[in-house]
Length: 345
Image (tube, rainbow, N blue to C red; front, side, top):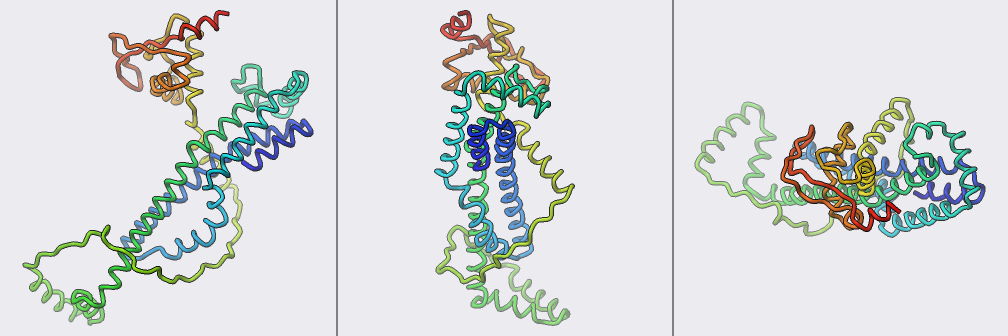
């Protein structure tokens, strides 16, 4: 986000369209990077479960996370005012760009089409500069409102899972050497294989009629913090490979494939009502792509939201909406009376 903000400020100084393209690229990387962080914590939780099955505690990975990765990477990202500060400054820079003289905006659009011919294939509605600014704003909003809370939740799950396992391990290690069961397990572990079988048979005959009560792990508390060895601060530099870059690009594309906002859903409804001014039914909304199907499934909640109620209204009809993706009560979407008059004007 800091790089996107810097390139937007550089454009306002030199009016170089390459700065806008760089800002768009960095803004899209924010969501992809946060998605990789969420996947990183998901992998850590899976590793904790795997190590717990093998009766090991992933203390080294946890110490490395606290000493190295959290301090250098995640601490700054998880501060709310840091993310919101960058977000507000980026939105202010975007507004300053939109207020530039019309001649300057026209020159920038022509230069953008020369530098990035792929813009002609996008649905920019003949305004590539406005489309690019909207994409930057949407990417930053999505990162702050969706991916950042997901990252906090994923990291909290990892910390809670490790803390729970640590409590259990420390309680077991404390009581294991003092209990009869612990001494019996030590004796079996140190015995020869033939003697182990005889000891297990003797214990089985004694424990056959024993009733065992398990202790609730939630009642276990850690009395004092344990000392741990500080992990090395030196990290091996990552090796960039073509396969790694391709995999990262695929993850970014997967994370951004269905990244949409309420404005996108309402915009699709507005476009449908342009073709059908008297109203459009839920069953008639286009669903030729997965994104259009998601728009249709989220349409009622978007219309009943704050922004949707100001522009549209929805009423139920006595028919079923049986589409290729869902079946529900059919709805009729129309413009609000004030909004419809403003469109006619």
